[in-house]
Image (cartoon, rainbow, N blue to C red; front, side, top):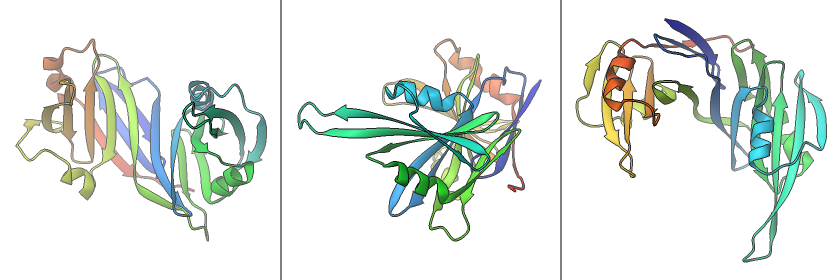
Length: 235
């Protein structure tokens, strides 16, 4: 059995226990509302910011600041629309701590805009992840709960959310397969690929099987999984 604990961006401690390889890194995603706009933040391993910047074509980070006991790095790239001949600035901003990092991608944002956004939140790093909450007196809000993404070899990509009212409302209307871990549903994506949804007592887990996964083995693989979501002090 393998047991891991991951802290979500909104402060919950996700505990996974299963006879599977759970050692792969995880990411936690949450949306923040501020000034009438929605900003997506992703937390993960320390190298995540550099990975996102490279994927966005940002060659490197040109600006560096010290903020919230970590390092804020900002990089930019101009992206031109060949039809309109207009160019947008793509900005990747990442806050890097000792073990984890927090990253967001913005468009046509100045350095002042980035500092204003980060200044509206309190960022804290723990041994099991990063949390963000609106700073006292700021107008920032967390829009919904966080999502945890984790690849499990031999099984698939897991998308895990807390068992909230909204998450339960999106469960299939038919009865699922009863497992020790919860109620399991099977469905297909628009491209015909199968996926599963496990409604556990504490969380809802969407499982996208890997290409190498034997789909018929998924119920047995999930049967031995234990999932807990525990509130944790943030500060």
